[in-house]
Image 1 (cartoon, rainbow, N blue to C red):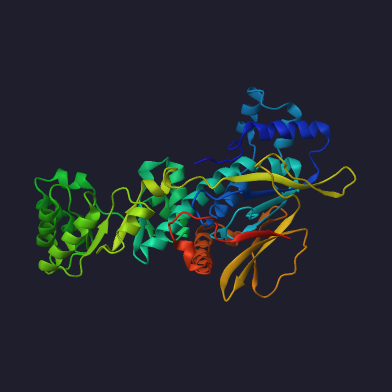
Image 2 (image 1 turned 60 degrees about the vertical axis):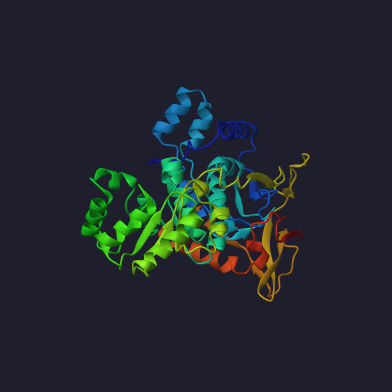
Length: 432
């Protein structure tokens, strides 16, 4: 693992830093804001995930001798900038929506207040984490909705790189998945892990029945047998013969899952294994899970669609300067005005309005120009105060808190939020 996160950034961050140091503007106080201008097509809400990982990366954002030597050897920045970087430590404030929170277009999900020099360096590391983790969480939340209480396991580690695999398991769990196959995610974040056997284990043995007996001899009946290596009907019969009628579960990984699940359920019941559950895998996404709603399926294993971009369109977060102190020390609101890339300037807070406990509006407040009522929930919380990370948002306890918070706020969405039909964002964002 990386001991420093300082080079998880784009060169232009250091280019701006160097120019600002020479111009004398590097120490101007600034507010940067993270938001998205639009949700992916058809999505009705987003799910913020990754803020706990952001805090860990910021804590590790230090330029040691090795990083500084590399910058110098490759002429990335000059000696004055290297000297400044040698003592870098973020000393500002970070406020954000709580991890697991629902968001909408222009929700100010995270803001960074510090000097320009300190804050500008964090753009890439913040965006790379929030964009990936939030995209995974949003896709996972849709799957949780259509699974309707059935077990969901994330098992996509072999479909992405080793670092994003752990991040995806974490984000999926926050969004409501029950377990992951990734052991590092279990180790790092205390996420429940699961996993039994693949086809290779069956193929290793002289026949399927021998393989099943070997697995049962080791794990007992509380295991899942993969029944589709050769023939599913034969596999089910061999599973029950090897384990008896108290076998915990069988897994189907091929074929028309709706047809096969029904056939397997009928056969298990005929054989007396009425309590044996059925787990299905094989390129599942929210649409195929929804199509299995009426099938006798007890659990889903999801891989590719929850860990790769093909399953979760980008969250689209950007990191923009919205306010800074001028030469006289007065605060000035600023905003980009480019066509289709504009935004609102100014330091912001946010509240969500509710009617009878159901979310009705997102109120984005510029410069404290809004009077909240008892029906308005303050969405912002302090993650970093004068450089000090608020530890309740980090580690395994932070992941569990984010998971619980997500379940709570998702339950406050209108029922139509959980539909997979293409639609515009569910909640209107209002500026005050």
